[in-house]
Image (tube, rainbow, N blue to C red; front, side, top):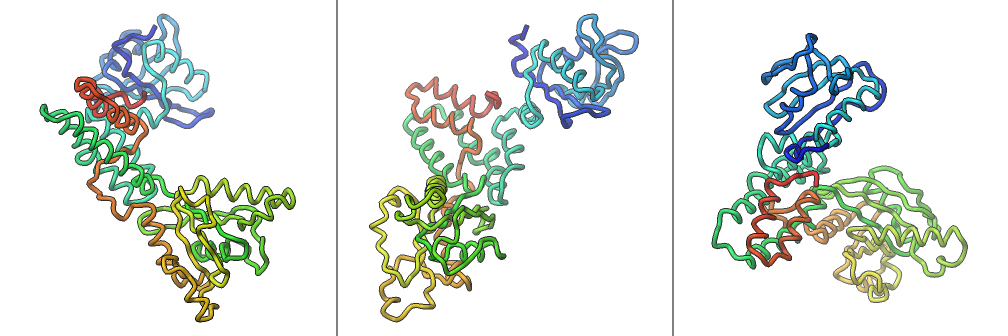
Length: 390
């Protein structure tokens, strides 16, 4: 039966799945030493009181039943490593024994966070150590690293220390945190940009220029791209996945099944994009007001093939639209700057408090709705020192 006092204890297999000579299991938690004392016996059948840094050979037992001959090391006061035979049935049996002693079974990553939490006593600092490894940009890594000692961690500690702080003040700061979190997400996880527009406007040519190689087929025939193609590139500090979509044309939507699929796929990508680059042939009359779907989207309008314009045509291009020549790259730098402006990352202060895990975002969202000071204090404490595996 799971013991209440052991609810924060975690166990994980830290080696790869499958049959191997040796498997590694780690146990982390304030009751880990107590559990190891119960299940680990030396060759004489006695329990072993391991000191930090010591390694002993012996047996894992479940009551009187021998599970496996193992080597156990005490890595810190609350962290133990068990090396056992790699047979999956043996590994599973040891994990079941640990579960029976009150350990929650988690993956290796979650266990690492638990270990960091025990070492630092700070959930935000522990999460930062892991999430930095997942960030897709150096700016994202730095932003996460700043959240433990400064940013979100410092703000939460200030909230707890200031006995006179008002609920309204906390709510105002929570709003700022969540707003900044939306922008920070692009630095931490990357952004999706969809190149959309009518057929034969140069979308594939623009994608190829951003990729630095021939990624999409280019031809002077409307509808050459029937399915989406994507590339990964960097715009400023942001890792971006750029999608080239089929040319948008209402007439194609019902012409045949292939064109209908292409139109639907393009719309699906546009729906999930963080920013849309709407590319059109500068020589073709264009009215952005006709695109009803852009009203609630972040859109950068770009006029392509500007080198082919007559003076009268050039005068007709909207001054707020970016003028580019996709095949040579002229104006593409400006286009990328506009995309970054729409993402909102340029104005993001590195010292700004942001959430970088769903746990943090959920708790800050709860604080935004709270009306009771004591409940607010509990949530802030949970933000700093809560169970990161909830």
